[in-house]
Image 1 (tube, rainbow, N blue to C red):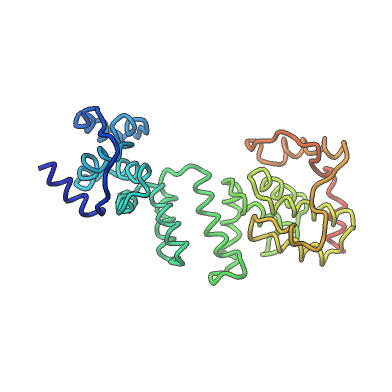
Image 2: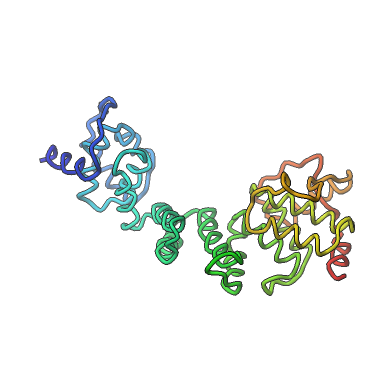
Length: 302
């Protein structure tokens, strides 16, 4: 009966030669352990029970997972053999059964395909699950960008701002960069506040957004009256809705941060008191701005 089930499963997911060595352990004895992991998730048991071995995975576990409502096992099977023909059916099965990461991944697929209502259905289900904070931030950030970017067909600033604020706190780099620009210029009904802008830009840098570092460099140029307000806004907006660097094709330079010893010391003030203290900070020779934002406030009021 199990051989028949395996053949049916292989026909469903597509035939491909299985060349890996068969897993030695008696995997039948693992079935209660795999079942238990559906209630109390334990990622190590899938390694111990032969999920990494393609032959064991396809001949033993695939048909069993097809028969039963095992969301974790279904996702773990997909995760280990993503390039195997037809294996994506297990990702969708895991999503249908409510696996949060699977829901997010299917949502990403739908989003990238331009199927926004479908993506939002999967995303909303994923957020209600047990996703880590950063994954929740990724979803919230994607939806926020959908509403925040003027080039989007779904542009709606009233919907964008609360999503951006939530995603920024959930460590989404691009949302912090966008909030930095909105706070700097008082856009989308966000209160103009250079200190908040600095915090958002710096958090985005710590989270790995190169465009935010350029924006912070522009912030400094404006603060020193080296560029006018119109130029500052024009250049920052080029770096607002993407974390990609613009510097290589830019007409205004430099954007790299270059500061005095005192200004470098001041960054510790921001890192410890104004920026998310749980983010990594190791210090840099060229680091930050003076804690006094009055110059930028004066500049912006011109």
